[in-house]
Amino acid sequence: MIVVLLIIIISVVQIASAAVKVDTSALREAVTVEGVRAHQQAFQDIANANGGTREASSPGYFASAAYVAAQATAAGYNVTIQDFEYPFFEEQAPAELEQIDPNPTVYPYFDNAGFATMEYSGSGDVTAIAEGVDLLLPPAAAANTSTSGCEASDFDGFTPGNIAIIQRGTCSFALKAQNAEAAGASGVVIFNEGQEGRTDAFLGTLGGPGATVPVVGANFNVGVELAAGGVTVRMFVNATSEIRPTQNVLAETPGGRDDRVVVVGAHLDSVPVGPGIQDNGSGSAAILEIALQMAAQEIEPRNQVRFAWWGAEESGLLGAQHYVDNLSARETKNIALNLNFDMIGSPNFVRFVYDGDGSATGTAGPNGSKNIEQVFLDYFGEQGLATEPTAFDGRSDYGPFIEVGIPAGGLFTGAEGIKTEEQVAIYGGTAGDQYDPCYHLACDTFDNISLEALDQMSDAAAHATMTFAMTTSSVNGTSKGKGLGTWDGNMEFKGSAARQ
Image (cartoon, rainbow, N blue to C red; front, side, top):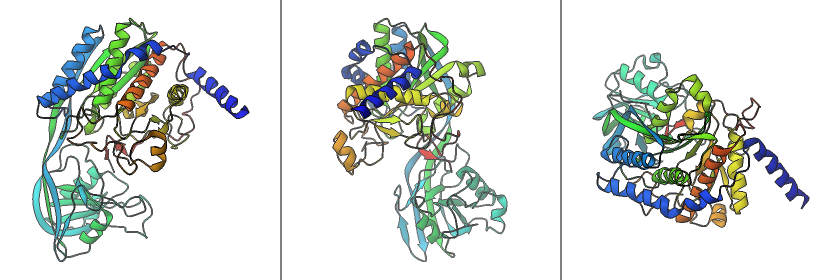
């Protein structure tokens, strides 16, 4: 009993520094799962009428943005459409990678044991001799120490027209590919580095259009086989890589302190292959319903609330990045925090809360992030609902905010990760399956949902939004520290693709 009381006392002390206690029950009761589902149905109908997708440059996306803007405008919000351009990439056919000689082998596409196309790869159907470039193979190599392809001099003596076989490590994939092209490579295979945890094929990005030859990321063993010497390889990539227009939708409350703005965000776009009704129609629909119900209840926030629906998240958090990049120094300082809700209805869900203080994952957000985390933990604790921490790994739109020192937090119910037996014992569901079996697939439709998770997470999102909208305390507190973790402003991922 003494231990329990101590925990309660600690929780009260932590929350006191984050936000004044606010009664959010009326808002949570108004934010119903039926209301959220109505917006998801609207997104599904839009996708159905526009080729089955709401990708950021598609007619389905612009129709989704128009729907959100119209709803928010009618509710009395000040709505801004922020137009911008972004790099678009889409494969038109499955890529192919095969060894022609001396050991004919077809490597599996989009498979851990095979390869995957690099985002923004060029197109081509190439058959040529494979040539290794400055390789440093285990056990001689320590983790992340390979500089293969990072210097133009690595290609001294490289035979133009050959396919460059380059090892992952140290520098960006874009630089490796650029150096290979400059040396005359007809194609590029970047294979994983080889240490424990860095052997599988991987999703990588070149950062934007520009490559004119096929570029893929491969399993370590595939790379070693191709670099053995005298190996003839065929590569095929058919993809569109170009600059396209898109937009963010911003809706802010007419009142509230504009020097303590609460940005509540979710990305609105889907991947090209599907309608994205869970990823991220769930978060987008939830924050829209929260905004509408706050207006319906005539809530006058102490702090201005800015709801944001980001475009081009699936291309690398580009909508949120564009927004943050275009803030003045004063506007950046005036943002108190960012709440991010990306995938909150996964069918095989876990209730994940971003680990603001880094106590579980070792990576803290900027100062104040631990207070945001605590608001969620206290709320779920009061509801008798278990949670687990998830890391700030750069895979969603909080990334650009924490890079400029804005505290962030939010919720997540899982993507391609695999549910464990231990998690099943707590949350139910199926062990050994993905949290969302339709993640980034065409089957991410209106039916790809857990209503239980969507209901619980929407309520939690409403609670946090209103808590920070009404608080009289600064989420940052007075400390200049960043919490207990080791946030250094660097992330391997931006979106779902690795940069190096």
